[in-house]
Length: 619
Image (tube, rainbow, N blue to C red):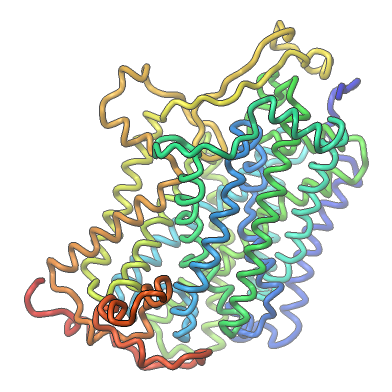
């Protein structure tokens, strides 16, 4: 595993050609869909692909948006530094798929909607709809800026790719094909891009395994280095990754994404029928399992390859986020064109996430803001406005990438922010879908409470992160492996490095003071990020229910059954009917016809009826 020469960090002409081809193919798919079919002349086609997409491209798009560039760069590093416990998220994905199909998907298919937040107006009122939409938009705009900037920063540090050239090329090309090609372009470019992502993972796995003597030898090295661990069943919620935090907490983290996130709901609706949407999500769940296995195995093989010389300790990279592109250049830097292909796979992850985000942002802004102000706007004009919105959000995402560059170490902050907001939004939708007594006041107060709690705990955790005992990383063979590069560490014969606390995929500052010097409240800040969605979603739910009961609960007789999910009938169908009938809280679900719902307008409880939906006296 020794390198006679220092790593080749320079892109060749062939590498640039391959990278440019990625951008050209993605743009070409957008041009094709702009010139064929209905030519994106209606919002139904632009935002929902005419609701007639096949399940396979939708499934691959769901997988592609799941693999953001942060996931592509971060999941292997997670296993490299902390071990294989992240692999257990695969169990969470299976549960998420089942819960989404059984609980959330039917509700959205019962309504002829484009924006998921239209549900909140039908169930509560317009104020709740706008509050949910604005929360989603704030989360996505910040996240998209990071998704563009983070891989460009990591790759520019270990290759000679221009940082801002990468940011602008990825941001502008993505904005171009999303704006002119609509949802069809987003879905089919995702199919192309997810293929590149898997090629990148498999190339790194195979390349590293060959260097260390095979998969079995690589696994043994990782096991000896303390990286293989699946059996931590401690119930302590402050431990970063245990079986319970990953499987249970991870279920709620990803349920917030696949259950109620606009980007995913919009894809389900593009299938047209619930049966096609089910097939798409089942295939996507299988795809996500393949992704987590590939990403985690990449990290295990990367550890085996660098077991005797950690590039971070040796100063070969500045941050852990740069390890994946460093590995690519280390393994394949001398093969013309191959580094360009693998770097393209990383940017493919960024393109897929950004394109889905831009399309969903255009959808919610158009439906929740523009359509609310101008309900009778002609279709052609409204379609043009949604395209302008998509382009505007693309430029805003590029601007946010510039803002991210001024904030320093922002990757962890962005990931935590994404999880913090997802939990309260999940709680908000759950409040409406599962609890008939909830009212609009409770929904807004619950959402604000969940967000305040999330920001409070997360900000506190930046000052008092819990200590973490990671397996060591060794540097004893660095001088032999990289003789032309090592100059900042004087003795490599023995030694190891332990890293400060990490929550997510990038380093955050160490703890303030020794553990004994911490205030008592620091224990609360030590909550594992894996529990964030459950904790803050539960805060939204509990506060929302209490406020609803105190301000006058909604009468069950006034709630349209199509806006609710009979959760006990779905999840506890073995209970006798006499018990389940009481658990329905007075909702007459039997009024709904079984079978495939038609995607036509139905008569819902109007917003103007909201005042009549509560009892006169608080309960």
